[in-house]
Amino acid sequence: MKIMSINAGSSSLKFSLFDMETETSIASGLFERIGIEKSNYKIKYQGTKIEQEVPLETHADAVDILLKKLVELNIIASLDEIDAIGHRVAHGGDLYKSSVLITEKVVDDLVNLKDFAPLHNPAHVLGIRAFQQALPNVPMTIVPDTAFHQTMDEVTYMYPVPYEWYSEYKVRKYGAHGTSHRYIAETLAEKLGRNDLRIINCHLGNGGSITAIKDGKCVDTSMGFTPLAGIMMGTRSGDIDPSIIPYVMEKEGKNASEIISDLNKKSGFLGLSCYSSDARDILDGVSKGLEKCYLAQEKFVRTVVNYIASYYVLLGGCDILCFTAGIGENSIPFRMKIVEKLACLGIKLDVDRNNTRDLDMFKISSDDSSVDVYVVATNEELLIARDTLELIS
Ligand code: ADP
Image (cartoon, rainbow, N blue to C red):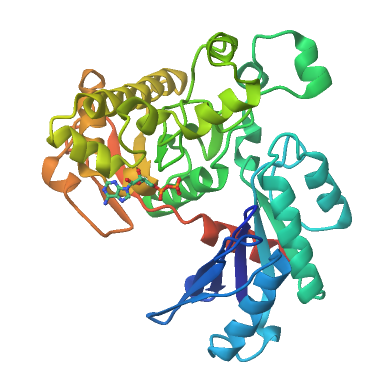
């Protein structure tokens, strides 16, 4: 059984093809700059990597080349080997509480939800249409990144704003990174043999979010109506006072969408450090004595610790604190700085364990820590494939 996970962006298409008997990725890759000059693709398979510049006017062109290459490179003998395709979807609104098989209604819903994810949802629809055209008989699913957070209660997802903003315009907390948070919750439950865990999961990548999970269900998450909310990120501000927006609009003669773009693309590590959006560069800057990099490092740690502390109270304690994604899985110094600030909760790091590298799951807390702290490598693509397999079975 072979299942493909797809993540179609506005000018890109990522894929991962899984052999579901072993749950291993047999090929993966990325088509980039679709619709713009210098479009190209990269495919990794059996320890080999190919890269090529090729004209890609539409997502359908990318899908055409992808399917041809899978056969040409002997990754599969024929397209009949692709049993199903799962599409990652950024926003399922409050309509989708889990992954579902794609029907025309599902595609219409994604189009109607475009106001919530104007860059992403239309791109997902392009990806779905391209695969429907190329492989009309292959069943397909959507796996919405918001679905896992649909278990949040009303007190959590409502904002204290005029009620009509919710009833008329559906303004509420939706969250994001749900597929990653669910993968971590399911992996911890399976590996530790417990379904009753209180988990605080820190997905710290270029985008970042923290989720409070109880008995496998999301209780609260740091991202909000959009992925701009929550902790400070690579280029995103996270939570700020909304009054800043009209104030800076007037000062700089910008409109609201220009300011939102600054908050999405010029803030976070990049904004505060005036140096880089990348966590490694920030640490490098700190070691060179750059004060703004130090400020950025400390602000990031502070916003992460604040959310962990608030979720510790919300969950009435915590069994597992988990780190995942680029910074969470790899940054020994950032994990140390965060955990050190949690000493008042009895959470303690084991420095040697924290130095572990290249494992999919490892513990970094000391044996006398009040909470077990783990690092778990996330694998959203595999969860998309697993959901798809379950839906077609
Ligand atoms: P996204 O998927 O949100 O684009 P990633 O999960 O790939 O982001 O995370 C990117 C972040 O992870 C960057 O800030 C990068 O510096 C950080 N990162 C990746 N590898 C390492 C590493 N070895 N040490 C420290 N930080 C790392």
